[in-house]
Image (cartoon, rainbow, N blue to C red; front, side, top):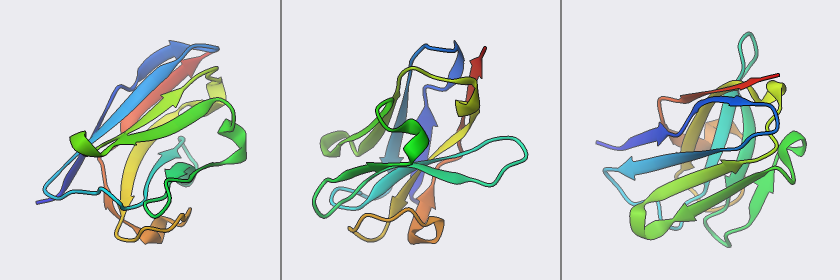
Length: 124
């Protein structure tokens, strides 16, 4: 059974930092595209950051560029999201996701494996 488990969420003041982790089990995602999405209350889930499997290119939604960094450790079958200079509008449930493919994509439908989500709350 494939599982993705996020950790590291919590409450932080605006301007602070948080690091999220996502540990995968059941299969290796080395070489596959991985990403983080988020869903704020009353809003649809949106793409945040991705890391392509084919050539390890990172890509971000505009609102987090320069503040968030996605990375992976294939030996640990894990994906990370370092979030700096957090803003209240970053408040959301954050989900890690893994695709079956290796190309960069922002489409939810391309990601077939999802974690249960971890809450990030940024206070003003």
